[in-house]
Image (cartoon, rainbow, N blue to C red; front, side, top):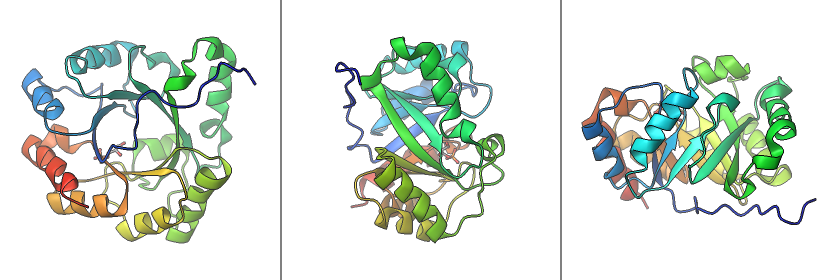
Length: 239
Ligand code: 1GP
């Protein structure tokens, strides 16, 4: 192993309770972006499952960069990796029979670009995708019909065997089963639990904040800005 590889991320994600996930393929006005970035959220994650390009990622990053809050890119394809983010979240899908989404694309990326990867900014995520209708679920052939026990066991593979810093329970587009999320969290020893999917109300934001360490709010930003902003306080006030 090379001595100069440092695995401690430069930014600390432990403090993230609420994050907004912005999709480079969707339009957001300057005013709305201003309100999101000044909302009191802990960070912005840039990512999406389709239509993400280098151009639209650069554009969104440069607009977010006017604000002080941390910005991370969740890498979904190699063509849209843009330098200049504080961190790079790398999904490894756990509940897929297709190894390409677990380690395959990662192996090819490292073989090709390993010499220029800023390892200190890399944060791998053990993804468990649970909404069968989500683009990411279809793309990755995720086996979404998991019981809480099955999801919990995948989470422990990430936490205890792979020692990933993040487990991400992803219901993108659909509000999830919070009992399952609670169960997943109980089995984790060190990984931080992200929950994302279908949060539209303060009540849902609160429930998700009770079940997970970090709550990810996405689509509602593009549908109901006021409701999106209310999720920040709801999460912040949840112990
Ligand atoms: C998507 O987990 C995030 O990757 C958030 O989901 O867009 O449904 O809020 P929503």
